[in-house]
Image (cartoon, rainbow, N blue to C red; front, side, top):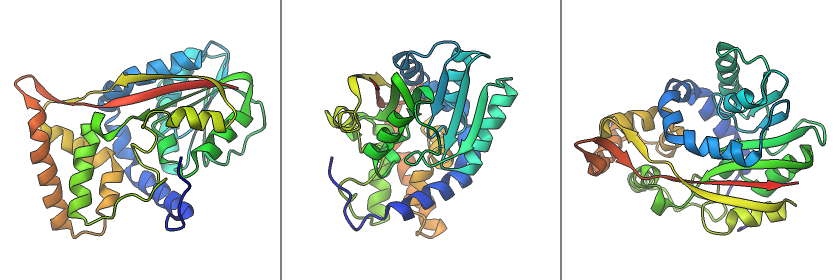
Length: 287
């Protein structure tokens, strides 16, 4: 994996991520039923690969508004424990609310940087991270920290998006926004939705962080909606990264960009509704 270049400011990036999710977290929770339909199978396979059992202690990094922490809590049961962490104080509070609404007292939440865990060594049976690792500036640092807090034989399981070619749901809007906002190409090594999706990248990261026996599965995650209009509504509200890419544009121009995105996404409409391709890589390894 390429080293981060000096033009990429990791600290500034993390602050922007925290602010973005503090602002957009409520929308992510509001669309949770839709997002769970899209990513539910990847979540289930990730929990399977983590080999989660009743009574275990689980750490969920970049937990967002409660998944996969809630699903993990249901698997470990009342005798287990799940710590849900996220860099955003606002969104981790939403995760706490979701867990309480479901009566899952075994879920604890804390705001925490996934690359710098304020946690003791060898204190968890499994570490989970769904759609978070690819947004971390130093993924090997993150994985090394996760390995540190795992007990011997513990499992790490992650889900990331694969390549842009297999994820039209995001690649098409991103390319339109990048062109309209006149953004330069991503800096090599810069975090982003498809930064860890190329063949061999995840295996290499696990190896560098000291993990063994990596297993990786490609899982289809088609993004379905009633129409392109509904899909764009979800994207506008829940995928804060798109808005961040064009935050410098006037409001009228941003609206025009979204109209162009919606027009492009109409090619995925059919009499049966809307479906645009997506693919996750679900991966796990052992300490």
